[in-house]
Amino acid sequence: MNDRTALVTGANKGIGKEIARQLAAEGLTVYVGSRDAERGRRAVEEIGGDARPMVLDVTDADSIATAAARLDRLDILVNNAGIMVGGSTAPEADLEDFRRTYETNVFGVLAVTNAFLPALRRSDAPRIVNVSSGTGSLTWSADPEHQFAVSAGSGAAYRSSKTALNALTLYTAQALASEGFKVNALAPGLRRTDLNARAAGSDGDPAEGAAGAGRLALLPDTGPTGGFFSWDGTPAPW
Ligand code: NDP
Image 1 (cartoon, rainbow, N blue to C red):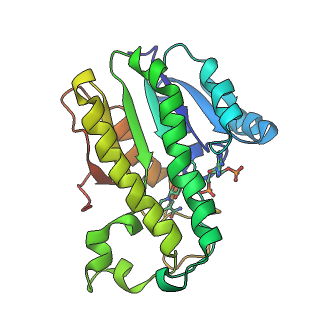
Image 2: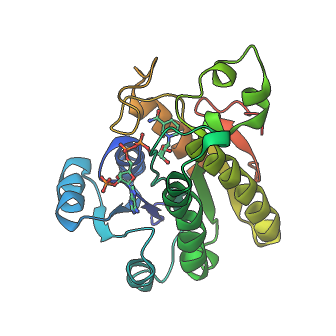
């Protein structure tokens, strides 16, 4: 299985770069998605192993098509690229925050998964990992005892985009289950990155969250599909 190939979107920094580093250290060929070519090349040098740059803007149809045309076969797709903009709450929403956020966090994942599906179908053990967020859990958000119920700091646009991503994860898993796909969503935990540097409690090591993605990316054939998991492998509530 050492000839496996992975693609991690948004892998020039943050959690995505750590996911790429960990998969490369496992001996996989890893395409390091980056919307900026130069930053992607620099990340590849830091990641080491058989890491290769791939220019990929998940909101740009031409960029996605060009990237997808490079790969005949893909074993692992990690939809990691994500943004958090604005902080509006649902009743006073800035619709532009919602549109921008959904464009990357929801439509971007749909478009990338769709484009790489033919290559994934040529894998003997296709895996898709969608990097979601615990803040997208409706169960946790509705639980008055849970931190996500009281801290709406990350905003309704971001949180609901991850709820939508969770739903898409389940539907994709159901649609592809008979073809041997494992499709799961990950809550990587609060991690110190550019996206979350100023969030309260965000002192976590990105590598720890990335390990959760690596576990789902390397699932055996007996592993779960259509699930939502925390970084430590425990099931997270939808
Ligand atoms: P970073 O901001 O550090 O990294 C985000 C990555 O996504 C960057 O590489 C960024 O590229 C890329 N990206 C953004 N928009 C696009 C696009 N249109 N096309 C391609 N790449 C894009 O954030 P994190 O590492 O923290 O976030 C990674 C994932 O983890 C996200 O999905 C996030 O929602 C999720 N997450 C993070 C948590 C945390 O606490 N940090 C908690 C829960 C979930 P560029 O450098 O060009 O901007």
